[in-house]
Image (cartoon, rainbow, N blue to C red):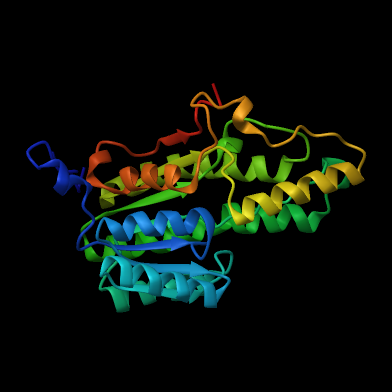
Length: 277
């Protein structure tokens, strides 16, 4: 193994969870789950670049986090499905933050349609963002982590849809998330010699702006097609007596990118309140 991962047993807990001096990118972080992840990473001391299609919201989120946690934070418009856009974001992180240690592939789409009514364009768009976007981000992050020779961590936001199918009409989404689980395993194998770990985090349904809108759209599409789907009330599956909130997931991501999890790579951590049991 050209890059042995260190034994951190002698380091204090406060040091293991700290991200001080590390540089991170979070995709799709202008709102919702991505913003919660960005907030915890900057609270732990990381400098940060937020990628999002909404440039104004990305810049506003970055400014707020920089002021709150006294870190460097940048917001920029970037399309995770576009190679040139991802390269530009990775290069900017290196140029303005001084390097790249953490990359969180959070951006995703959640459109739904029954297989027989699903247009080619919907399938292709979901895979462009949810699968190709994760591949591009991971590749460009790993290239830069390898260049500076200090390793790093890539975290892919998967979803319980990478383990199961909650209701009809999810073929594109479920397939894309299974792909990301597989990609996470392959990244772990390919990148370990470079000192780069790869982990997945699989949340259950968490009410955010994007998820709420997507759930409503899915229900409307199913109704129009004459298909009844169960309400997205995961309280019925939750073993903890409440819905998850974005910060529940953000704390798991913080664990994954910190040295607390240095023994782990290739796994996808279920952050699902027991839903997938």
